[in-house]
Length: 164
Image 1 (cartoon, rainbow, N blue to C red):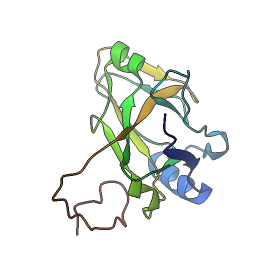
Image 2 (image 1 turned 135 degrees about the vertical axis):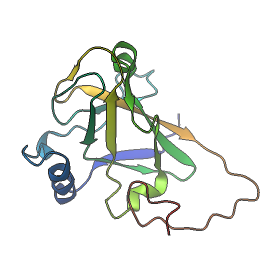
Image 3 (image 1 turned 60 degrees about the vertical axis):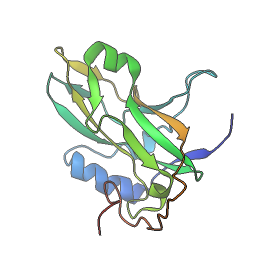
Image 4 (image 1 turned 90 degrees about the vertical axis):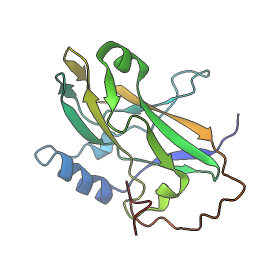
């Protein structure tokens, strides 16, 4: 297996600003954030851990700043998915179906801060405890077309490519 990426926390200032935007009444959990990790040597996915306990009734949505960024080698992408068990048992899903974290997102103005927006699309309430694995990321190589001439440079954060 190739070693092609490194997880790290965003700065405390970046996290606290993003946290206040999502959860203005809750104290920042920056000091207890855990970096994603694989549970077993055979796991493809790196577990992302919830920075807070949350409950979602059917149809409810939550936007979670993870406090995590990923430095990714060129030619690779990080794909984010719900944790398999939560998707299977509760139909928990990412609102963008699959999160795509490009290598150049790391250098964005928002420090490449990875957010996860979830919806409980099932029929029963879902509860996730603080520091419980709730999402997973898988690194995948990607190719480009022979006539590709992309030369843009990312400056913005989430959802910024293609604007300008």
